[in-house]
Length: 184
Image 1 (cartoon, one colour):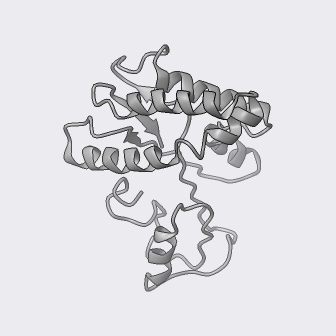
Image 2 (tube, one colour; image 1 turned 180 degrees about the vertical axis):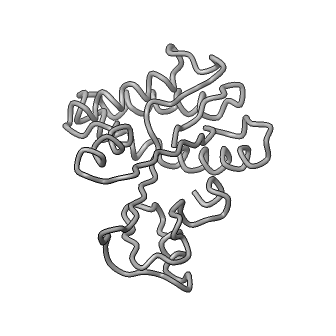
Image 3 (tube, one colour; image 1 turned 60 degrees about the horizontal axis):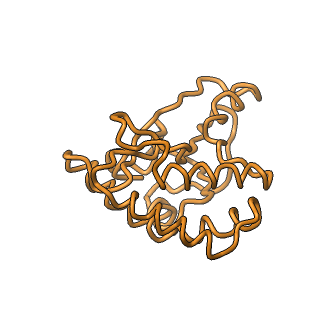
């Protein structure tokens, strides 16, 4: 994420003066450890006048040039995971709902900032190529573990059926002719 936001730990205008930071789901924990070692590392929770920041990817994948088609194995994989998670009562569209929810419960000055994480090394731009490299490494590793339970439990698929789908989706995920990205 730091590469996406120009080396910063967060977008908060109080980046260097934060008193408290709550870390939830920052992946491997590298970000949290780095932020904790930051000279002004905060401790507990939000107070009046404080700043709340959430960073997450949104589904579905997006593509600006039509190279990710709805009949591709990657689109099919993503659609099935979304359907399965909905069936399990855990829809994966929460990021799209954060801004209106926060405004509804009384947060003021809510700002949504959007970024693109390429699915692989397809971009020409050096920064986005690096983001794509990291994105592919993460998804390549997480594809099976993030798909098996939803599809077997939420759609009733067999393990073997899921593994075949994952193999096909992985092939498209690695194809640099597909210019898709994770909206962040």
